[in-house]
Length: 253
Image 1 (cartoon, rainbow, N blue to C red):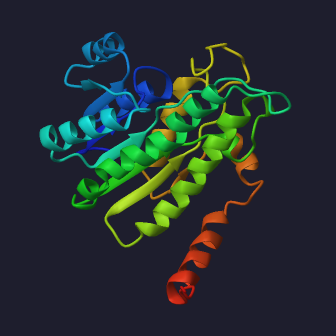
Image 2 (cartoon, rainbow, N blue to C red):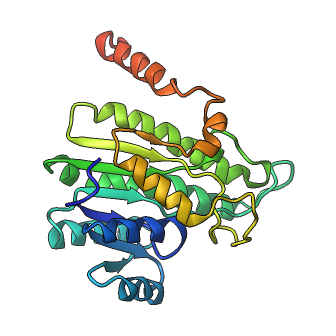
């Protein structure tokens, strides 16, 4: 994708990877609009990055998504990049009773949030000269964690959705990109400074480098072997299967 000259909206961008991407794109001269639930944090980030804008968004609320998307299209008609970054990662135990309310919140935030946000903006993005949708999944989409079972499942589902959406938009000007971070030293759970976690600055630098290419799936070298577990040719297979259904539709009725 092109790394400059964009109008970019990023969800969940007041800390961690979201803030890192927002500031990296901002430094390249893009118009960046960030969102989050807490106005104080939005104000803190935008004050540190003059020219960046912020808007409050509850990604679990369809009404909030509708309101923010309408504001974006009206106030920023050149909006051409959506980065679905907002997410949460509570611990759980699939061998025990799992709190249903927590599971619903994870799935509403991590899966329905990106689906709803993209749906609200998709026709606007399709009308731009060039556009991109970037979904932030995770290495756990390919290598799930037993201690974060619902989170892992939500990211695997978003990975699946990303690939089908890429296929569905193949004949449009909208590029669909997946970034799948490794363990990055952020406060998604808590900032541990564990030496096994990739430093945030290094992750952002490598991700921005790869975003500047034609790659559709952004994987840092440290997790490539884990991604290769299901096979990096996975999308080609999915594309061929979907194309076969386009060419030979399943009879209805």
